[in-house]
Image 1 (cartoon, helix red, strand yellow):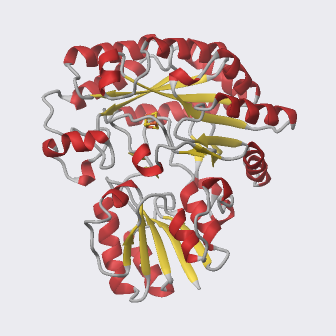
Image 2 (cartoon, rainbow, N blue to C red):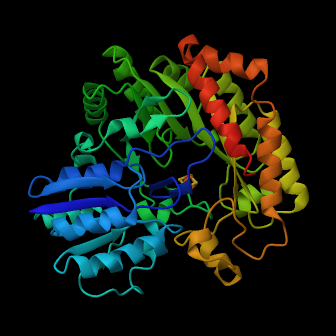
Image 3 (cartoon, rainbow, N blue to C red):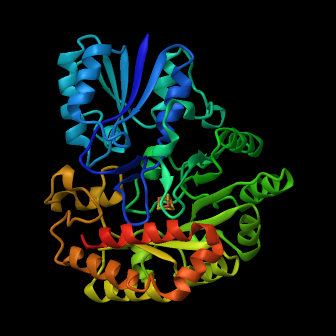
Length: 435
Ligand code: SF4
């Protein structure tokens, strides 16, 4: 019996994984769909499953409607986010007429948040929380812990569709943990994955890295809410990679208050070349109001240590958090350019359903779901966030093509990556025109 795991077609290239629901930005690429991979790996024990990433494959809605009309799968898991939600649900409504017996399982943070208030008949089920739970139910299993999931069914997707911009090489995602004990107001991770930190066994993670390598892929993004949350755990993973001489190149995310130089040097030795930090603001009061709650002095210390460990760094900044003023935005932008980051991303504070910010701002929202993007003004804020965001991007990346930056990138990535660095740089400069 046929089953589909579907990422519906959309007009923009999107990242759609848990709390990450955004259009692909500068130097970014769409993610290999690991949740779809998990779902397929679970379901394929009983069904003839197909992963269809229509965004990566650039399918039209007509193509996918013709396909469902022909194949009439028993059920379809549908990956949704806030900005794609209206479009995704329109498609499901068409499907309901084209394949009269198919059931639909709609998942993602938005579907989860509104699950109780949405009704589309008894063939459409809006999943609350992580979708793998429903997939296990469909094969007759209950309460399977995240650490016991099978590896994503990467053999069911075209790996060449997902390449790291700066290297032009395929990469895969290994999810080491789920859940975040922090409560940042703008983030939906605690709502979706819960506040309890759940990690996989180191041995299991190493097995998965080997599985990825067996597919001919040597680049990994370790995906977690905070990869370095448990430093001993990360050290153990690194030591195993080094001990077993696994040649792998990887990236991860972090919080600035969860790294130290010893850890960073070990991570470098184990193949880490890029760390993404959620810095958000240079203003301590805003960090406290938004419950990010780290000592703002630590950001520059973490970036300096990352540089010392010869790892590249990305800083993520949110403009327009509660309590923000023109003055605080300007100082955050200035700060982002001064602390030695290699890349910076600037987001307008977006009250995604599932976040505390949504509860706080829902009466001020002036935008429809489609515009829920980090580049849009979503609320009736008096601050012209778009203008600040444009200024931030332009003023940060104006320096990108200067000799020291290029030299550092080549130093970390290798001389053979010069054409790819140039290519990614030019493509990103073209994208900068929209700011
Ligand atoms: S630390 Fe904050 S931003 Fe990061 S995943 Fe946790 S709640 Fe979200």
